[in-house]
Length: 148
Image (tube, rainbow, N blue to C red; front, side, top):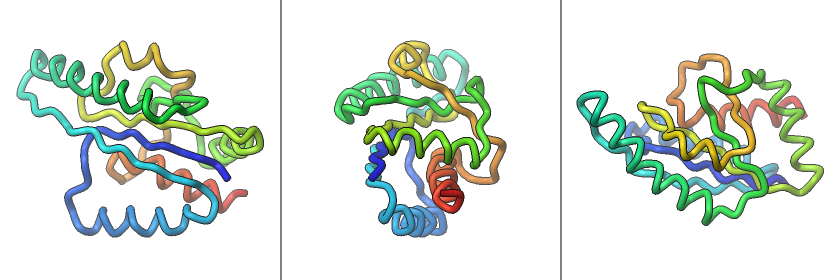
């Protein structure tokens, strides 16, 4: 069984997204052992504040990466390699066959601090979806299971 830790900045507040999360977790439970670590989102009002927010979030992200003890850490970032659900499914199958534990990082509205990238092995980006960024991974894991 594939093990995945999703480390995401921010928390879902709306009930319809919370119920969507619950549904994805239920569907994924047969195929993926999923752990979610939510990092508090830092408030900011300008670019200087955004830099401070990234630094603050970086500490929580790196602590969560260390605690997850994943074999491979993957950042979801707009500068990453674009992957379709089919390609993503293939990559997940490769990791699953090797019994790996993956950690996916999803940043907040200001993205990641550069120090976070020093702790990742891969960067992916998904085609634009009308979902909160945090749940792109759950959507793609779910759609990837359908391609398996």
